[in-house]
Length: 305
Image 1 (cartoon, one colour):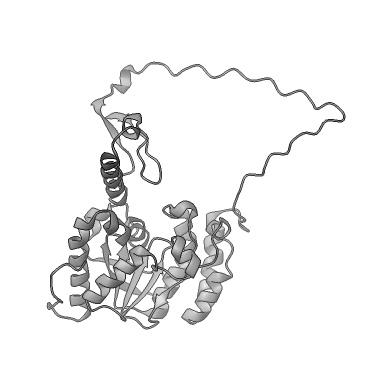
Image 2 (cartoon, rainbow, N blue to C red):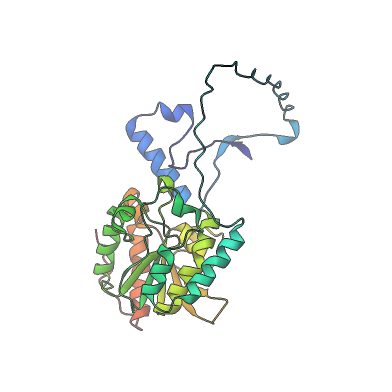
């Protein structure tokens, strides 16, 4: 295996050679890294192999630095700004999940579930700069539930999921597939992750009881997950989205016996970067529409724009 080349969370390459690339080449590299990230690839390797058995010894540890001398009387010691951290009323993720499960079970409607989520403060994301909880939009009795990854900036501002550029693309594709007005849309987490990063598995686990309760209350016929993180959270798998998409799975809740067929597909934000991938998502939507209507007939197979 080759030496690891790091890349940043926003998919910008860190290799100095990439930093000096032309704008067109840089955009191409960024799009390629984004594709790998959405496909579940989390490590990049160099072209030249490295013999790990002949690696040089690690450098010696740095010498310990002498502690600063105590301040003299009459001097003012500058205060360091505290490191930003989430206010979590629990010590472990397991305890936070237990709190979420208790709050979710008490909700007997989507309205009361929404209020429970808005009042929940054991998820670290709720104290990381998000303006509000972004819960769901659509029809409460919809036959199709769409589960995304997490809110973005526009969703955080408006308090509704999938209302940004990616959401508008999703709406156009749903309309073309004759699914408009037949969906309810939510996410695996309800607060915007800092910097629009992908929510962590721990954050998704804390919010999972609320998402599961929504499935119990809505009782959709089918579920569509969009994005790798959503598919992994709902289907409990580590498979990449390019392998999962287009194949039916099953979302089965351990308690209560509620289940629903799941179709994983690519995230619309990825389609904005890679328009040629729209055909794959369109095929997935046609499969959902056909199964929802109980027939092999589907809308026009031409991919919408």
